Amino acid sequence: MLTCADVVRLITDYTEGRLTPAERRRFEEHISICPPCRSFLDQMRKTVERLGELREEDVPPAMEQHLLDAFRDWSRNE
Ligand SMILES: [Zn+2]
Image (cartoon, rainbow, N blue to C red):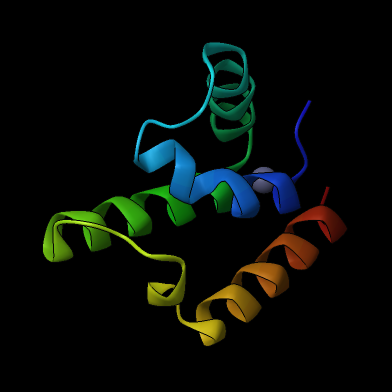
């Protein structure tokens, strides 16, 4: 099972279809059980639709921080 940090690391490759089928399956498994990662993926998809493509530097650092906070709150409520 992937961790949230793995999802953040792999998300660009995922949205661009560069993961192997096995990686992709594990990614989707995590997304299906992890609400913060699911909203992160939605956000990324909207960004890709808007820009037509996504580069690493398009992910605002503030958003990464926000995600880390979200993950922390979420696991605390577990
Ligand atoms: Zn997650």
